[in-house]
Image (spheres, rainbow, N blue to C red):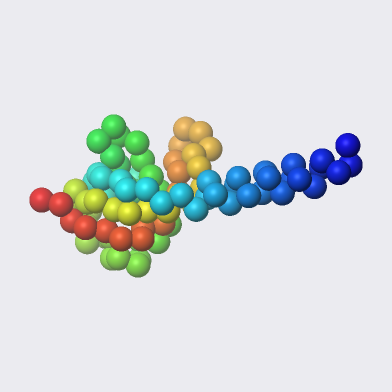
Length: 97
């Protein structure tokens, strides 16, 4: 029993590392979400799912509010529940017409 525990823990840690490093492409609209003291920039896709952006300063996303974009992102944290969307990091972004 004791020999299986380290392998189980190592496998779990590797799985978590892989899930946090997922790169995906999203298409949607950049918008501010939330009330004034706790607002944040988010990307909303066509199914109205929100993705909180962790690095809005990197691409000056404030200027892209209400514009459609296609972005390559890395998932940093999965959604916890209602009101706590997944947190993403923008790797590359293109404005769509």
